[in-house]
Every structure is written in C-alpha cells, then in structure tokens.
Length: 315
Image (cartoon, rainbow, N blue to C red):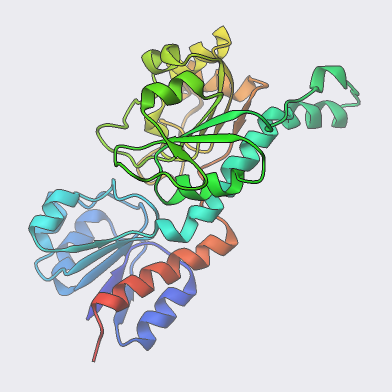
C-alpha cells in the first residue's frame, strides 16, 4: 500500500510504517492541484492542516482507502463525502489530550495569579504586590463544554484542586468521577470558569457570542484550547470591557488560517478586537500550541501508526 505524506511529522511515523510494509512518499511542497493530479496512485493520505481535502480532491483519489489527520479534529476534510466513498478516516485526539489539558490548566492558573502583568512589572523594576493579588482555584465551579478526550483529560487534571467540575456535551452519559454532566443551562448558571473542548462543527461555530456571554449567571474566566472560530472575538472583547468576562486564555483565534500556521500577513489587516486582546492585561495568548509538545509530537504519530496498522495489515 502506498501512502502520501503531505505534512512533516515525527520521524517515527515513516520509520514504523516502512517497517510494517507500507510504501511512503513525502511531499510537503506541491500545490493542491499538483497533489490532485497524482493522488490516484495512493492508497492512503496523512495530513495535518496543509489544505482542505474537499469533494474535488476526493474525486481524484480513486484508489484512496484512508485519510489520517495528525491532530484532534477533522474539519479540514469533507467527512460526509469521504465516508460515502468508503474512505476510512483517522484522527488522533488521544495523542495530544494530555498536552492540551496541561496547557489549559497553565493558562487558567496564569490568569488567576496575574502572572503576565506580574512578570512584566518585575522585569521593569515595579514591585506591586497588592495590584497582583490573585485568586485560588479551590472552591470554584468550572464548566467544561465538550467532554471527549481533551475535556476528560482537563477534568482529571482538576481533580486535585478541590473544585466542582461540571461538563456539558451533546452526547449523553459522559460524566464520570471527575465531572458531573449537566444541561448547558445549569452549567451557565453555576460555572465561574468556562473551558472549551469542542470540535469545529456547524453547531460550535460562533458558539461563544454576545448571547452566550450574557446568559452566564456569573462573571467568568474563559479558556479556549479548542478551535478559534468557536468564539466571536468582538463579543469576547465587549465582555472583557464590561467585566462580564474576567479574563481569557486563548490558544486559538478565529482569525487563524485553515493551516493554523499564521494570522495576518500585513499590519493593516489586524482587527481592532485582536489589538485589544494583545494589550489587555487579563488575556493570555499562545499560537495554537496547546497540543504541540515534544511528547505529543511522538504520541500523535504513534496513534496514527497504530490505527492504520490495526485496519490495514500489509502482508
């Protein structure tokens, strides 16, 4: 079986797939049109987020048996059409769930303890203790929206902090010893922290908007390590200005390109809302790296190898 690798990944992926008997080709530079012209030669594709695998691409892939995405989501793949064509789809949320949960916790603790402003002030010779008085997690109620791999991992991390953890998901009976599953209405009524762990779907696009923010019973902190387009940035900024949102930790932004590789090519393209986030003392930003640790780099690759090998054993 011939596999086309469209993004670079950990070397163990090529090494193990080769050992298992697969024929691997790497192509990290060809245009989408150039890949479409040769994809009919391949049984499998492994991609991160380089471009969208849409209907046109899949129509060219007459031999394709599987597509593997080295990441948690599948939003850059036309899932319905691929499944209609009998193509097996793999992703690897198991590979970076721990990394994402640790990053979410780090962002939350940073916000609670004002580490961004405290650091900047100390290195600039300011010693402002009262202004940097923080909050403790103990006794707080945290709401997790999306209780799959990363949501469960985050709840597990919180289990030692003596907090109440609530979770909401469109699927039923997902609650466990680390989080009580409740309705979205109850979560909004009780939560003092909201952490998003949802995939990008039509239901989650723009999910945290002005209406959502206003419907929260208490002022709250927001953590988003899921997908940037789940939060309407302008509404988030309004919430920060009004005090309805106490602080935000954002590893993802709605302005990200499909490849997740950058934001704006020109200074003039930067929106006012993003400029506000850059300057806000109660906002912590990172460049979509929550699931991008040295350890998850290995785990993601190994997860994909294991899933391919399970279904496609080469003689």
